[in-house]
Amino acid sequence: MLQDKPMTRRGILSVVNSIYDPLGFLAPVILPAKLLLKELCKEQHGWDKDIGVKHAKDWKIWIEDVTHLSNFHVNRCLKSLDFGCTASAQLHHFSDASEYAYGTLDRKEGSLLNDPEVKNKVTVNTIKVCEDMEPMNELINYHSSWHELKRSVAWILKVKETLWKLKEERKELSRAISQTEKDPDKQKLKLEQHMKKVKGTIGKKSLTLDDLVTAESEIIQFSQKQQFGEDIENTAEGQTAWPQAHSGVVTLILRDIHQRTGHCGRSYVLAQLRRKYWIPQANSAIRKIISKCTTCRRINGKVGEQKMACLPEDRLLPDKPPFTNTGVDFFGPFNVKRGRGTVKRYGVMFTCLTLRAVHIEVADSLDTDSCINAIRRFISRRGQVTIMRSDNGTNFVSSERELREAIQLDNGKIERDLQPKGIKWIFNSPAASHQGGVWERANPDGEKNPQFPTERTSSE
Image 1 (cartoon, rainbow, N blue to C red):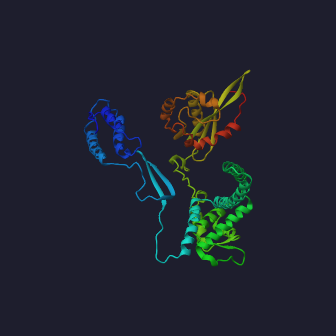
Image 2: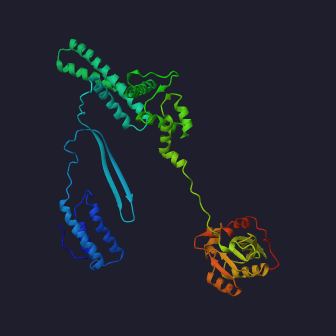
Image 3: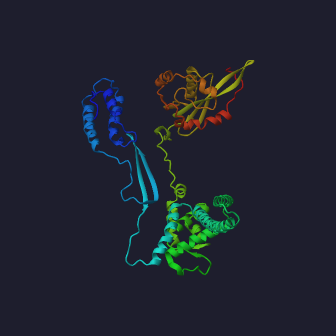
């Protein structure tokens, strides 16, 4: 039973938090109420203020839906009544995000070992073959790497041989101890101590090349027996015939060769495959492996093509005189001799937006008046300017730290001074120096190799 609370932000929060759901089974039901709280927070509703008609309607609908939770039950044990021994168990987890919530889905997959289906015409030999093949099929389905599969089979064969030797050795040792020791407890103790030493020595041994070759041979014989029966023979060239190009073992083989060859194409993988194995319909199997290879799809994926945006209209006016549309930028400083001392001077670079021609003036400082004087000298020399573009205020891009920190231009004053002259001033967006690439590209050349004199001039 939900508590009876007022339809306020505080009351809704109290009702939502009163629902006990530690495992999250009721998350899809509680989510609409949490989204309603989110909307109330965005609208800055007070804690004890009425939520309004619109939100009250949604809240009442949610309250009616919550009453149906009494019919919801979750079994403490997820096993079904006919649940047998587990052959394989897998947990699949899916997740997705949206603008509203984060959704997840967990799904359990598995196979059971139940009693086999009984048929009238199943012979004893067929049943024996099926029983022998079932463990190997499970082992193949469990592994995703050909190398790991060979190692697993090699360890199984090695342990099998070891256990057989231990069994025979245990019998001989038991007979020897029983002849020399009469006490049964001491006989058992000596036997266990000796077997522990033998097991510890065997467990420290690693796999050899012969073990891996034997394991590979066992896997091949199993696959051949499963497909062709007992009459299969190797081909004349010494290559091994494999069944079913899309079987589990063949898929592991092809994937291993594809990865070892550096994710090469179909023809090269096929050539490397046929040096050792002969697989019918190998072309289609290799094509399927390559099409599902994540690395190949990432390498061979279509590269995104950056499309160039349309140029501004003032960049495409070749019929106008040079510097009709101009971009301006500062660079520097340069040390200039003045009398016995040294002063700093800055460069003002004017770039024609159409022809990319460059005109450079010298500014005494980085203040607004020096900038206006440089523009006036530029207009007197090059003619009337229609459009002037520049960076926005202090966001001039330059390699000199001092230049970035010292620029203090009054954009409004510059624009007001130039408007009577018929000049339209356009400022770039803040922190967007790429918009002024026309003049920024020429800036380093003027900074590194200035073509104007930096010595003392007559005007100084």
